[in-house]
Structures are given as structure tokens and as C-alpha cells.
Amino acid sequence: MSGSMAAIDGAEVAKHNTKRSCWIVLDSKVYDVTSFLSKHPGGAAIILKQAGTDATEEFKKYHPLDYVNDLPPGSLLGPVDPNTFGELRTAKEEKATSASNADTEKEIPHPTLCVSCADFKKAAKAVMPRKSYIYASTSANTGHSLRTNLDDWGRINFRPRVMRDVGDVDTRRAIFGHSSLYPFYISPMGTLGAIHSGAEPEMVRGAVRKGAHMVVSTASSKSAEQIMQTFHDEQTRLKNASPTQLFYQFYMPVDRKRAVALMHIVKKCGYKGLWITVDTPVLGKRTADRVLQAEETLAVGLEEESTAEWEAAEENAFSPAFGGRVVAGQLSPHTTWRDLAWIRKEWDGPIVLKGIQCAEDAKLACEYGCDGILLSNHGGRQLHTAPSALMTLLEIRTYCPEIIGKMEIFLDGGLRDGSDVLKALCLGATAVGVGRPFLYALAAYGSKGVERCVDVLADELALGMRLLGVTALDQLRPEMVNASRLLNEMWRPEAAGLKSRL
Ligand SMILES: Cc1cc2nc3c(=O)[nH]c(=O)nc-3n(C[C@H](O)[C@H](O)[C@H](O)COP(=O)(O)O)c2cc1C
Image (cartoon, rainbow, N blue to C red; front, side, top):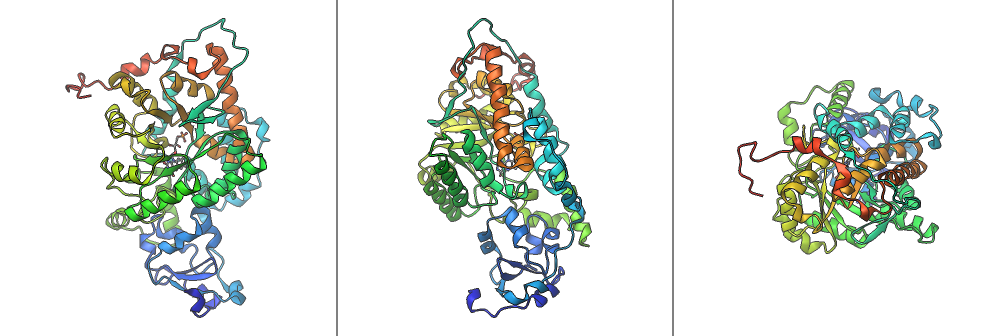
């Protein structure tokens, strides 16, 4: 391969810095990415900013390095002459994120001063490059789905019991038999390299030190193997005293062979379950990301691409990673319930469908033999005006309560307080996922922040249990919450002029 190819002068690479001829260096090799520009799911501007430069560091923030193998055949031109590295161009200053370096020097409060999830967001906002903050905080369309997620937790009240000796409380909960110290886990979030230089391994270290489970994203900046290696290293350091386990979130690749190969890697690594994301057949409209992308396009002098071109590029090529669109073919809009049959043959561990949003699909998942469902609208990043996970759980309780107990039921979206976790558990959830608070904690403080965020949620959880009058999570009951406000708003087939087929 590049070993037998002639070395290319850095000065030559530097000349190819336009959309007509765009070369970049990745891991000391030169690639001609001109034909790939229009296909890059994250937009041409991101690559053009790196044209004629060594883009390795920027690339690694978002993808494992072996993703270069997905570039069109013939892209690899040869190794860069090591003596001429200095002649490469320096990447264009990112206008949209030019404040970032100044920002990272900003003082932020000591992590101990973070006493609620909102504090991590504030600290993160102060240090994160604008682009990364937009990636984390963006949501679909007008932001309605995200607001609903956040608001619905507050629309359920507790019905506490008193005088019940709550001196000691036990917050442990198992997921598929794997005990965790808490009934919450860290939700899968892609491209953490854009959030913190330690990326996913940094998050894993924090999780392991605190005994919290974590679901790792397919769209991670590091490979499934690298992330698992960190897990083992940290466990060894702690003399295997942490109950933490890693599960794997699966975006179904378009190509079935690739899907199977990835599943086998994940299994071999020792991930304890497959969380298949089903709410992302296509990418939602991440409004703030789109604005940023348009700014970047203008900043590098590219005209707006036509909508038709976008659609052609997105057909099979988007990924929900950075800016929502990263790796060609990583996700298939063609997946159906029938696919569960071959997935089951290839994966012999627990399967969870992530992104169930109505009682009918919850029931189907049970009929198809899934081990779990995650009620989620992807943190409000996919469908505009989607239901909150709580509303979906109430639908399940009303229309197909028999599935509770047959499958493990998880919820995520908008959980910002340990007592929110209790509400989900009262209504039958096994455990809940928490996303952005951990991401912000990582951005601001690295693994120390992740640890602190676990502590904050755990403290609120234990406090909530005592004030609610329970000492163990299996004492939580539906009658300990008043969900009548949400129930009043719940979808009713009769009201819609339909006969329930559930
Ligand atoms: C920055 C970011 C990246 C995400 N990446 C993924 C992903 O790669 N795969 C996935 O299934 N869900 C992804 N999600 C959704 C989360 O797994 C989870 O459903 C959501 O964040 C929960 O909502 P919360 O952030 O309000 O807690 C992402 C969410 C965020 C905020």
C-alpha cells in the first residue's frame, strides 16, 4: 500500500487546498478527498478547512483512525515525506469557534461546587468550543421535544409516606443481572472526542470509579476495543472492585456484513448487551447544527449546496455523530422488525430497542422477544413534538401493562435530578439513562466531573427515597406518584375516533 508509494512533498500537499483539488494528511498519509467533499455527511466545509494540512488531530476527535478505509478507492496517494511536514498548510482558523481557545482558559468553579446537573451545564458552556456546545445541546426543530422531556418530569408529583424508618437506604439495581450501585446509567453519546480530549475512555474511567453502568455509542471517537481496554485497565487499577459494566449502542449499518462483523467485535470485547437505536432511520433536524454548518459553508466560500444534492448525499450516508452526519453507510433507514430474526442469530446476549415511543411498538418488541425496551426520543433530537418517555410509559401502563415484568424497561430524556429517577421506577422502569449532564460534566472536568455527576444524582436519589418513605428500590409503587396531569393528556383511541387494537 502506501509503503510502496512514492513519498509526497508537504509543499505539494499544501497546494491542494481548494474544492477543485483537496488533499489532506491523515496519520502521515496523503489522501485526495476532492470527490468525497460533496459526500461528506458533515458537510464539505469541515474538510475544506483542513485542505492541504495534517488533519489527523481534528479527524481523531470524531472518528477512530481506521475510518479512513471508508474513503473512496483511490483516495490514498502515498505517505507524506516526513522531512517536509513543516511545509504543510496550517488549518484555517475556525471562524465559528475562534472564541474556543480563549474560552478554555476561563476559570470554572471547582467540581465540588457543582451541586446539581444544571451546574455542570453552566461550567461546560464556559469552557466548550461553541461548535461542541452546539453539538451537545442541539435538539430537533424548535426544541419542543427536548422541552417536553424536561417538563414532564415536573408534571408528576410524589405521594410520600412518612414514619417508615428510612435511616439506611439501598440504591442498587441490576440491569440484565449486572448489579449497579444505581438505577441510572450513562446514555450513549457519539463523538466524545469533540467534548473532551480523553473522549470515551475518560467517561469510562469516571463510570468505573463510581460503579455506574455505561452504554457506549457506535458513533464513538474511539473504537469499541479501545474503550473496552480502558474499562479493563481501570478495573485492574481498582482490583476489579467496581460493579460497572459496559453495554453497546448499535446503529445498524446499511451493509449487513458490516453489521454482523461489528456485532461480533462487540461481543468478543465483552459488552453485556446490544442497545439497537430504532428512532433514527434518518437524522432529525438539528436546528442549531444546521445554522453552524451554514456559517461554516459561507466562511470557506462554498455556495449553499442545493437541497437535492443534500438528499442524495444523505440517502445512505448520514450518521448521527458530530453535526449529526459523519460516517457513510453507518445507519440504515431500511431496518424493519423482520431484521430482529437475523440479529438474534448473530447476537446471543440481551437486545434492547432504544427509541420506543408508543405502546404498540412496546408490545411488538415484547412479541418479537426483545429483552428490553428503552423509551426515548433521543434526547429530543429526532422527531419534532415527540412524546416524552414518561408519556410512553403511561401509555404502556394503560394499554399493555402485561409487558411490564416480561422485559426490562428503560427510560431516558430530560432526567436532571435523582428524584426524577424514582418517578420512573415507581411506574415500572428497571433503570434510566442520563445523557447531557454526564457529557457536560466530562467537558468541564473530565472523569472527575463524571464522578461528581454520579455523586450528585446518587445523593438526590437517596434523599428522595428517604423523603418518599422507602429504603430499597423494590418498595417503589405506582401509587407513590400522582401522574394524573399527564394521564389527562394521554392519547386515547376513543377520543381520536379509533377502536383500540392493542
Ligand atoms: C450529544 C449527544 C449525542 C448522542 N449520541 C447518540 C448516539 O450516538 N447514539 C444514540 O443512540 N443516542 C445518542 N444520543 C441520545 C442519548 O443516548 C439519549 O437518548 C439522550 O441524550 C437522553 O436525553 P438527555 O440528554 O436529556 O439525558 C445522543 C445525545 C446527545 C445529547
